[in-house]
Length: 180
Image (cartoon, rainbow, N blue to C red; front, side, top):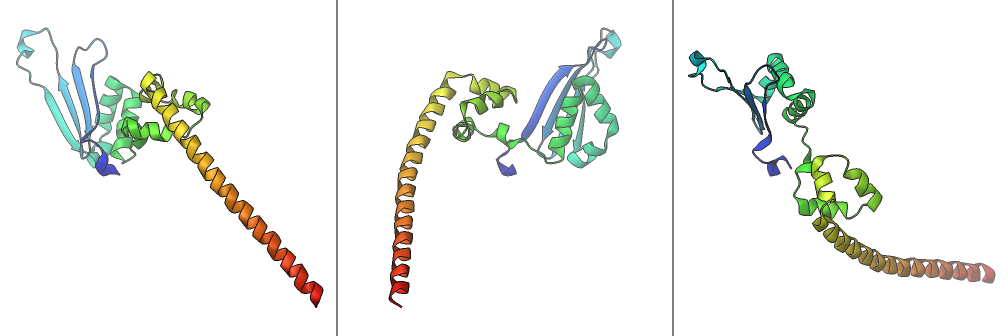
């Protein structure tokens, strides 16, 4: 399943908190974590400062407490935790699935459940609030209802045949015991 993941798992850019004007970029790929920093200064002597880039494997990143503090300072604790989870192989596969597959899965849910699901993340909120989603959702639910009716009829026929067969067997057992 991880082979379906994109090369860049997560990417975020932001300016450092005040008073710093530095710009930071964090990218978590399938194999490494890339941290880029641009120092922004009004002093003329720092004009020639080039961006700094640090690349670390997932294992090295998990051990780097200094980089954890930097990321938490610039992006916050949630981004740090999310990045650590990605490096540990804890992927959010449902969010990363294509929309058509996600809609197919959602079509088995009730409308109330979809309302709750739309509160879980921005992607699901955006998807559940779109007109396209509800058109596809209704189409798929109608199809499931039709399939359920069809299955229900065949299941009913099988149960009816089973019970008729069971009743027939009981009747023949009674006849056999009555003769002897």
